[in-house]
Length: 289
Image (cartoon, rainbow, N blue to C red; front, side):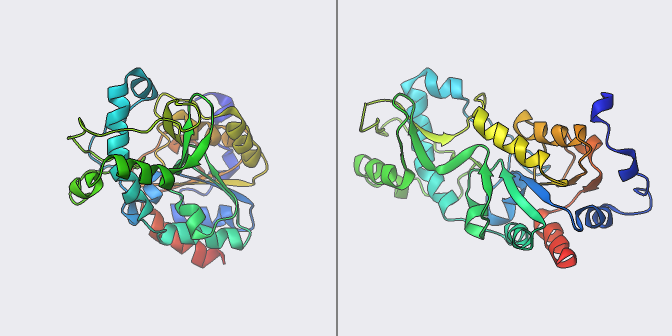
């Protein structure tokens, strides 16, 4: 590991004497913390993740595939027409609510989330950076106009009457990005931008697509202003989240990781808890408040 990424030695001196939870409490007490959350936080809301030990293999559509053909976009929108309703029906779980409580108490300064499900906002968080966008907004790739996903849903339903009811979500595999595994999409009709006729896309960051630079800089600024970083429910497999953990490590900011299974940031962590987010964050909130 490069020397500039080595965790501060003083934060590890008593690791052998304290378990992960006790160490996390010690670090978070009285500190101004940024939370970085991933799909593992939302599993208790019924939204599956990509990389937990129990998750089935999934191959999400890349931005290159989406832009590569109208047939690929037809497949995506047909599946999203089902999947977004499922995501919209989910509710915040105890993990989301625990983080919101910690924000109210001043322990959490802001949340950077890799999730597109808006559950942090619905749990009452005031300061949320949606790193990968949200499922509720649609953007035109030609003119940049943004619109509400619910409005598009009504248009798609008019063009495809009964499609959502026929392709019931019961038993369907749903991905965290609101993609439902629907096979019969050949007759599905799409909608183009009402303003310019351009390509519509959910305003979320696809695999292979870059997070907008202003969003990245906002996240860096939040990490720089924090006294600690709490990672919850992210394997940190992709660089979009891992870079903030590395930033914190370079600046000597302690890092707590709560996740089922290993992460790419484990060697940088000052405290590591291998467990579920709901119960762990709930315990942290009870002890710290």
